[in-house]
Length: 180
Image (cartoon, rainbow, N blue to C red; front, side, top):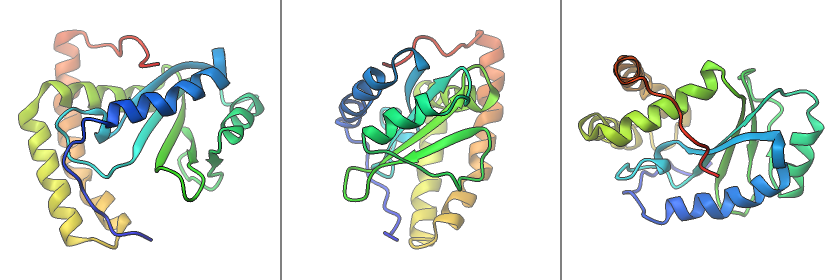
């Protein structure tokens, strides 16, 4: 497993998202209610692991074939062993650009949360900076331990989510249109 490396924001990440997401949109058609760029690469100014995270919102996981077959045909592999039952998780074919695809049911908390987190951090640079600092610290502390790195982010993520939830209520936040 590769070391955890955090990179400064790369202005090509939105373009990489679009290059990756457009074929997914074409392949899934109306099965995908939304296709959004999520994760740190979706937040201008955020340092991140250079992995494009894509969230696909669907009405239902069943039938699964209309989701599975087009994504497999594009070279994405379903990680059936993913323990999170609120999503179906796909990864890139080994040797290609790192891409994580999170398929979630539209309108669920698990679908809305990454969008709220992203939108809040896009508008709150102080909280974004705090998050970035924690990520750099954890990557230095746990360069070979993804579980410890991910778990170490929990406190700041939940702190930001609490702020984002309050902000969403005050400003009547909603996800807005799909990115693709």
